[in-house]
Image 1 (cartoon, rainbow, N blue to C red):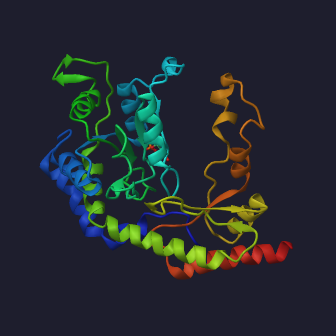
Image 2: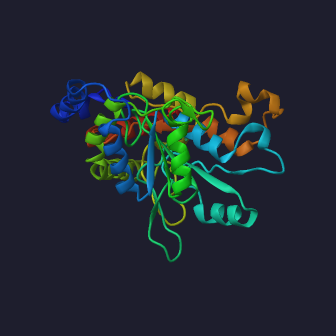
Length: 332
Ligand SMILES: Cc1ncc(COP(=O)(O)O)c(C=O)c1O
């Protein structure tokens, strides 16, 4: 049995007509930048997340850069006068937003939630209803990179906020900083959400709750089958939140050998992320060395992501788990 780490073709084949109509619809109507496909999708994200404003941009990276720029999180500002905090809701769960918001409040800092991987995740603070990732701080950003929980067929992203003024400025920043055509109030970006991607995302957001549930079911199956395996550590969901299994990561002993073994058995897998930030070449200038962040380094050596997407079958997941167990039996 061959198990893909990720594939878009099963979903496409399931909903072929809807996707084809969405894409053809954009072409038949004639090109319109930031047209109704984009505004309709922005409205759908507002409704789903509860954010007052949602502004579509070209990618999650652009969303992060634009929002950081607006809040003044630029490099030379990282001093004792630090402007804010960027919590990253990574993999399947959110960071402790109560603690982060308390620190931000005490020090009067802005909060930009990197929710690129967190579409569908919700956080419960005492006395409040569940709030969607990205809607608790000043800004939240989403990535709709194809493999994401809500993924396009190319790059796409979104900035959300509850602040009217920040939303107004963001809309200018995504079109070169212009308040109206050829009137530039800011030095902005060219980062529009593409209409074809928005039309595709409009199709996919209709099924988002269903896809999140399917991911949860797959994650539970992995947990159930691998919990007993002493060589594998399963992630625990912390605090009061609703997780979304965008990826299913485990910590595995002899990870690199396991990785090769899975590949030899035609099981796709991936390492998120093999090199911690402080050891990346681009951050050499900061002067960190191996050993400075031992937890991140250990995780980078042991982490492995297993295949998870709504269309993966139970048989495939069983096969992945059996193959992992077989690997440890063979080497012990
Ligand atoms: C945590 C996080 N932030 C930002 C990004 C950037 O998003 P994009 O790939 O849409 O540019 C990603 C994408 O993988 C991500 O996982």
